[in-house]
Length: 347
Image 1: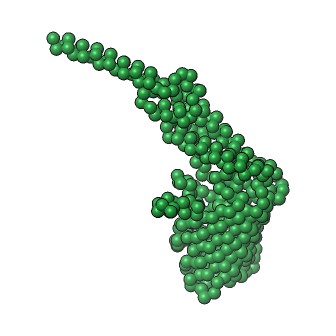
Image 2 (image 1 turned 135 degrees about the vertical axis):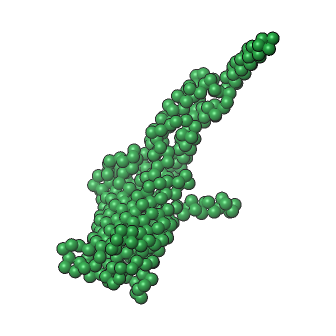
């Protein structure tokens, strides 16, 4: 008797489950043909428990539309770099890019969707990327830590705190790839950093140093090689001047260096410089590199950098020590910081 009841309950459960499943499928708002729906509608259906039977079709359509959307974003990026584009169209394209990226981020969180990660959340941003207004003003606050090597690797560590401003004059001539004139770039910074090469002829001690610096970058070559579908670099001449005040010195020391820089953006570059630091007898060769290694969700990045300041081996006065500096910086856009404060305090 009990076996018969259990059997009947099992049959009833299967019937109820099949009916409820059928009802759920019939209630799904995305009806065939699935590809006719847009990404937002497809995502809503994919996350709807009533659309379980259509999951596979929804996933296929989401991947296809995601690929098409990513290609559309690339095309809009090219359009916004047109120097003759009027402001109304420029703003409209930026809005489409922003909306498309948000849709791709939502898509990536919902399904296994890869291949456009750098487009959705790029670690590297180039000069002409609409996410940053590098052709106008660029402000950055940085906070980090630096290790200095004089006699041994990672001899001493000091904090790094500073403010950086970059200004690019001229239009965005992305169509003039190759040898050409690409405007004037000027920059300046105030930085609490290490004494670096300033003190190497007096003592091996490394101490905190306040540094004021400025310079100009005149690129004359724009690489047509796309490193990441949109990235391209500027190569040109760079001049950097500065004043360093070491906490152990009575007077500030000036620095003047010139050479060449290859840059993807104001914060991502490699440069080779030749110049002089006041207080040192030898002329110096300085090699610097800085690049992002991690991007946070709100757009700030962790940068790795290295600076080698070397005495020229053929210089008869090359008795001062070579200096190696390595650092990690958290670089935050000032506008994002101010926006966060406004949102937090309701300003």
